[in-house]
Structure formats: C-alpha cells, structure tokens
Image 1: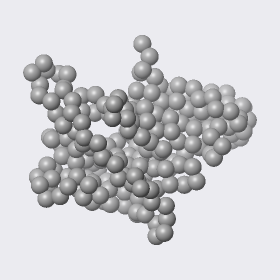
Image 2: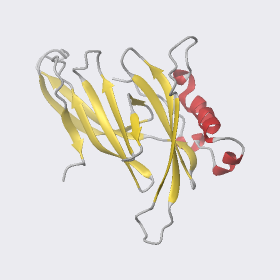
Image 3: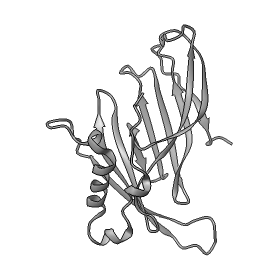
Image 4: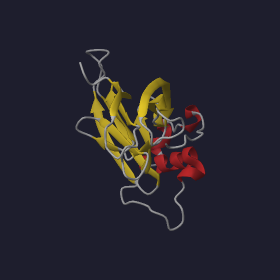
Length: 202
C-alpha cells in the first residue's frame, strides 16, 4: 500500500483569494503543490512526466442549505505527483471563494486483514475489518468525472491486479465525500473486491 506522507497543516498551505489577482490558478496550484508535496512530488530528472500532469475543471453548484442561496463556483485541480510500474499518483487542490486555494484531503477507511496463515498474504483471507477513518492527500490511478462531479481511484497492490483498493468521492455542498470503498485483499489471482463502505445503495 502507499506509504502516507507527512504534510504541513492545511491552514499553512492555503492561498487566499487575494493572491488570485497575481497569478493564474495553474501557477498558484503549482507553487502550493511544490510546498505541500516536498521532495516526494518533485519530478525526477529524465523521469516519467505525463502530458496530463496538470488538469483543471471549473463548475458551479447551488448550496442546499437555503432556497435563496446563490450559486457558487468551484475549481478542482489535479497535479501529477509520481508513478511506479502500475500506479500513478496525483494530488488534488480545490478553490472556493471563501477559502481560496487549498489541498483537498480524501477520507479513506483504515482496516485490518487476517489471513489463514499469519503474515502469509498468499494464504486464504479470513476477514477484513474496518477500524476507523484516515485522510489521504494523494490518490492512485484517479480520475474526475465532470458530469457526475465524482472522483474515483483504484490502487493496485501488485502488478497482476488481483489485490487492490478503490474509492469513490462525490461532490455535494462544496465538499467531496467518500461514498464507496472496496478492497480486494485476497492475492488469489482473481479480481474479487468486497465493499468495505457503501453509501450509494438505499
């Protein structure tokens, strides 16, 4: 699994709306990304750097807390951070009028796995137990769907793809909330993920 990063406090990593007058969102986000990602997200000399290393989407929404609330505009930014043999990592940033530009954290479940033979992931999986929630500032193999305002991620635990974790975060009222998360912890050669959290079903 991806080793979590040590990030600076979010309050110290925001760019206020006043700075928007001095630079484009791209320049602001790249500066913030260089600070937030540190050496971990700096491209290696001669390393892989995709054409879509910077993506930006702007959309509007009407807050649900009041019928008289005015529409608000949001800009979502995705910036390439790094890649391995089969996983590509991105960081996301979000601009809202009140907060300015800030890193976008993603809620993810914490869980424990139990195998038939202790410390042998190739033995049968006996149980997987959700133990709490944490937050990530990087997503793996992720994409944003502007039609559904949904971010999805799929992280391969090894190259053949028989073990993985996937999440879906949907935008509502100015925030991205985790609505679905599944895990395949079997290492059995087959793709057979099981939902760990599901707010999409009635």
